[in-house]
Image (cartoon, rainbow, N blue to C red):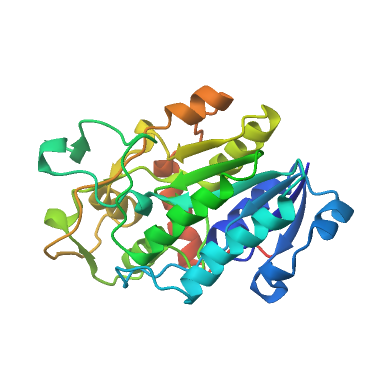
Length: 296
């Protein structure tokens, strides 16, 4: 399959690029190439079969939607441009979204205290109400609606996705492990990191995308997380990277977040195969050695 990967130099983009190129032909497209210069003619000339859009600007500081800002321009305007050039084609469009379209979900009555930290009484499905609390989440909702206009699209919402490597723009996985292995204090809320997450490796994310196209399962909003077997508290996550990490407790924070991935499983037969507990030592070692994402 020939894949156009928009945002291939970003944190998740490099991980997906490494995965996809094992069995596919990948065309990378990033900020210097200009998303808005893409055309229908280019897609057809290159024989693109699947387009994955990772381009994003994440304004989490503003609560209100800001028309004309970069978050609006790239997230919303970029999606509109892709809808335009994909119109009338049968190219598969995978539009990435985020749990932040749902806002805070779990309250104290929704979680249970265990020896491993908080654990949810239920997992968050695609039918959860939209309740974004920042500009980023609001912009991604609009992006989802735009992507729905293409009959060969799927919207994949992520909680936490990660790779094996360090990266300057990495998410909390990279920043927390980097602090832990470098002997710097790690500040965590909820009594020192009792909140839970369900990290998903980019290899598993890429495999899900391939299966959805293979099965021709289009027109869906899909929650993608690492599943119950990858559920972990932030405290245990840090201690797996460095058992002697200096964890400092600060107030605030959420109780956790984890997706119900049954829709993805039903549509494609997909199952996450990578265990985050196996990968934490790998990421920590790569950070210690200064090994960043693989070269493209």
